[in-house]
Amino acid sequence: MPPIKAALEAILLVVDEPVAEITLAQLLEHPTAEVHAALRELAAEYRDQGRGFELREIAGGWRYYTAEHCAPVVERFVTDGQQTRLTQAALETLSVIAYRQPVSRARVSAIRGVNSDGVMRTLTLRGLIQEAGQDPESQATLYRTTGYFLERLGLNSLDELPELAPYLPDEISDIEEIHG
Image (cartoon, rainbow, N blue to C red; front, side):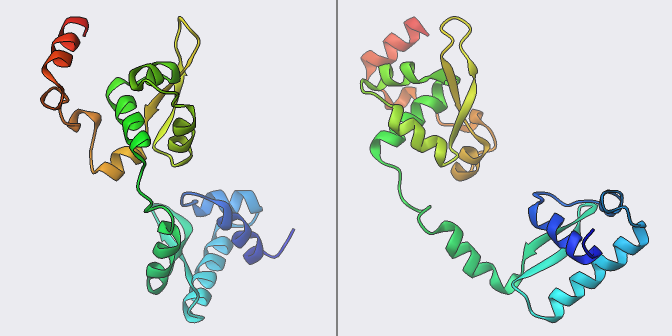
């Protein structure tokens, strides 16, 4: 086994949520008090050295976080390239999915009148849509928007999406009312 501090660093480097001391103690087969002391020492060492990260005790566990003074640099790194605007095709595809979900690729393409496969791959990679099971009749993969989509639009739920009817030409609104 590696030294306790090295083992703790290795574990905490890969977690995506805070890990409780008791869980770490069981995993490392060390007394909880020893793990507690090692975690506090690591946190103090990082703070004293002015590192770009901190070890914090939060939400009942421990996890690495970006140091406050480095947040602007990290934000710039994370958002670099992410501020790229969506293309018209991506916006259309995303709108169809948002209002018709769960929906298949074929249905999205039929509504838009063009093949949407490439755009849907892009939206999936950007975390805006995700698979939502299969259509029981056709076995086609269905898609829906993600929580990230709601977050980016500043919405709590899909119920907050604006009504479409005011934006549609009258003849399309009439058809939609008839066919639901």
